[in-house]
Amino acid sequence: DQQVKQNSPSLSVQEGRISILNCDYTNSMFDYFLWYKKYPAEGPTFLISISSIKDKNEDGRFTVFLNKSAKHLSLHIVPSQPGDSAVYFCAARTDKLIFGTGTRLQVFP
Amino acid sequence: EAQVTQNPRYLITVTGKKLTVTCSQNMNHEYMSWYRQDPGLGLRQIYYSMNVEVTDKGDVPEGYKVSRKEKRNFPLILESPSPNQTSLYFCASSGQLAGAYEQYFGPGTRLTVT
Image (cartoon, rainbow over the protein chains, first blue to last red):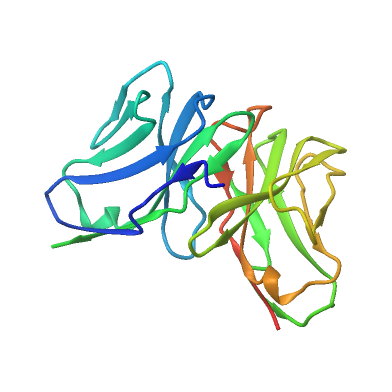
């Protein structure tokens, strides 16, 4: 029973354009959501988060949107850069973090 | 430098041979956790610890043991490894007691059991 789903295993975007990574969840009790980025041969690193009482949080080129009625979370990266190429995990919180399966983003020149 | 370290980074072993993967953090975090990452399954929690001498099962604890004798260390023990434990393992720590906010991850240990 996958409570946090990332239905797109991969995404390819041209440099300078917008990258949109999506995440769906099933548990309405989640109260906090996070995005992590993972480069090869490294551990995941925290990127950005959002509380369930908000619908948007922005940090530089990264913005996370939360649509509670649709149980949907998205991460927007604008403009995308080649260094953003990585695997992105969304995670949701109850008493612990539950991770999605990840989306591999490739940003090409 | 604040960090979580894991050793070894790579390990190939045979079925049944006991092994330990060490994890250490220098941030004085109360919460520590072990995850495994498998293709198509994301990160799944194996065990976690809220503080010294306090450990609890995560989502996939079968075949694993942990201990938390010191705040900084949280080793993962495979008493009798099997091929289905071939995976990429991550240790993580958090200063939040619930461990469910931002977690700091180690670099990972790639384990192959033949």
